[in-house]
Length: 345
Ligand SMILES: Nc1ncnc2c1ncn2[C@@H]1O[C@H](COP(=O)(O)OP(=O)(O)OP(=O)(O)O)[C@@H](O)[C@H]1O
Ligand SMILES: [Mg+2]
Image 1 (tube, rainbow, N blue to C red):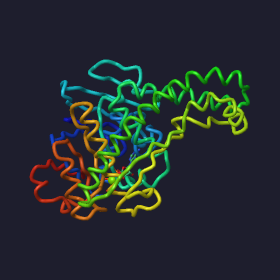
Image 2: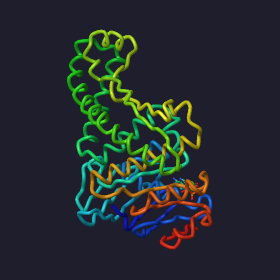
Image 3: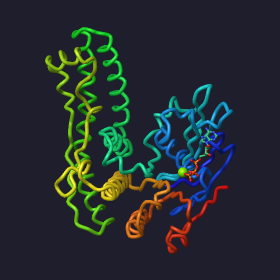
Image 4: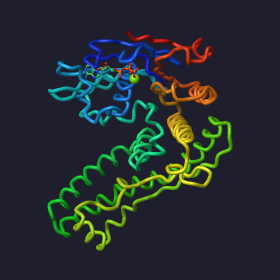
């Protein structure tokens, strides 16, 4: 997977700009506020339909403008593609290889990218929603049906929670149960299958990045959706007015040297562990799709010592990598040589 050209219009501070990327390393350099993170945000938006900064993508529209436009020409092993996405006050328009799509969700899963920034350690230290988002992200790019099932599940969950909030009776709620249990079970089955793989690869990556011998284990903490079929569950749910079991409450317990990393690992360990999970994810995506995702690294040099920096950079070899940095002097000499440097002013 390679992005050749990114075009943006009215996207954050950019009025109209176009960027051409190289096949391997790309460094995006510029002072604070120059727009470095914005370029990664635009690519992430094309990859997932979401921003990693805001929950409302209309916030990405340049102040005073009515719409924003983002497009990319990208290459997969099957050929060259073009995605165009316009959004704004008058709605959205998505075109993939010239053909209009009903919604952006039809495209999600086509352009795999893995993003890392200073918040990365939240994957270990943050709440369960971080680890659920991780699982979803990985499965969206490795399993064609997963995203559809996930969307369906969330629609059903929202409707079911609304019914619970409005005091619907057991008979009406049970109508929902079959469908929500069916899609929830499918999601949980896929999550359970992939966690073993993530765990093994994360351990490998962790020991490579740190040069030590950590034991990494992961346990799937499943909030079993099948429990929704029990009448005692329903009684509790009617009292608490929300859905009490299902993939929306899952977690992964991560053990580092036999103790929960969320509570006991140091920040540095959490950071390396989170990197390892993201690179494990990239590797699984690569195995499943037959080509690697694009790697997006936002300003990650500042928090790492040279040893970790070097090891992490070597993991990005043979993948198109876009890396933002304030300070070019932090980039190792040998990398600069094979790098395309984009300086934003
Ligand atoms: N919707 C918007 N319209 C216009 N400008 C915006 C919008 N949203 C953000 N900006 C501006 O874009 C700039 C932020 O760009 P960005 O975060 O990409 O910079 P950066 O190069 O990553 O900086 P840093 O080195 O500080 O991380 C800020 O100056 C901000 O005010
Ligand atoms: Mg930035």
